Image (cartoon, rainbow, N blue to C red; front, side, top):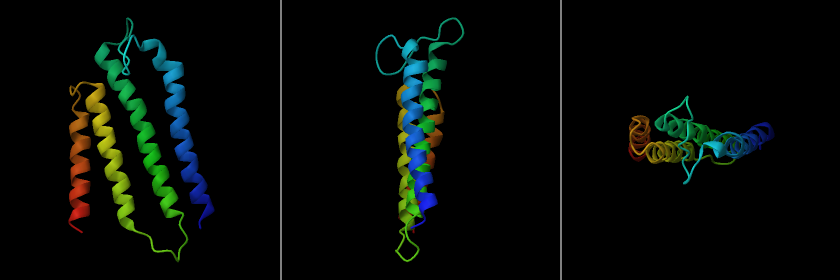
Length: 130
């Protein structure tokens, strides 16, 4: 087992977790009036901007977890059969989750969710086609 890749993957998962928790506590808690998605931007930001910032913040966490998962998979011992499809599935799940997050947070108004959904669909079609 490649221990450096394993520890790097674990670290990415922990960084993602702390990133979301600290962001919620230090940044988004004061911008939330009710509900899960913050909407209060004060005089500087409009509600739609706060919504996409929140989604983008947690999107980084999801992609960090995906990268961590890929590193952990790559850490498997060289002699062990490695299913490359797992890397594709991790990418598929991450892009699909990011698409859903952006769509939910922005009420479907930010087009980024469409691009992420298309990336997920292409990833899925690429996996099915192999």
